[in-house]
Image 1 (cartoon, rainbow, N blue to C red):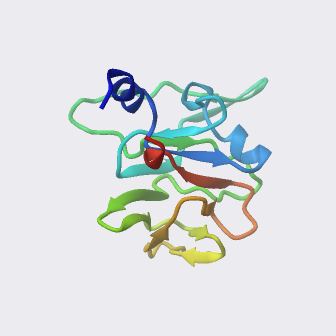
Image 2 (tube, rainbow, N blue to C red):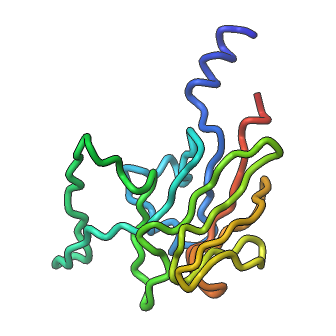
Length: 157
């Protein structure tokens, strides 16, 4: 393996979540937005709702997250849910890697997670399903505006 390939492997994410709607794009906190994509560098990758919001003159303001070394964060990415009815739970889902591919696990969310039309979890019960390259993940109910495409990049090296 060449030195350049090693460098690319270190810099490139293993996968990304690509926003498919304007609301999905707007849910990404700017500092976490890698040119319009959510980077997934390691698995499991946990997704949840940003709950540190304060209403301000220009909209919502995100309060500073206090880092406590004894308590790891609940999520790898925090999304801002500004829809009329909340779709994203504080600890919504995680993506894990298995021997045969990828799996999505609903972490007991209220509204569930939909993968290519298959509802997983909801009503605080959790659930799991297979996740493949190119699948569409809808966070919340089927009509939720928070839609992302799961894109695996590992195979490109």
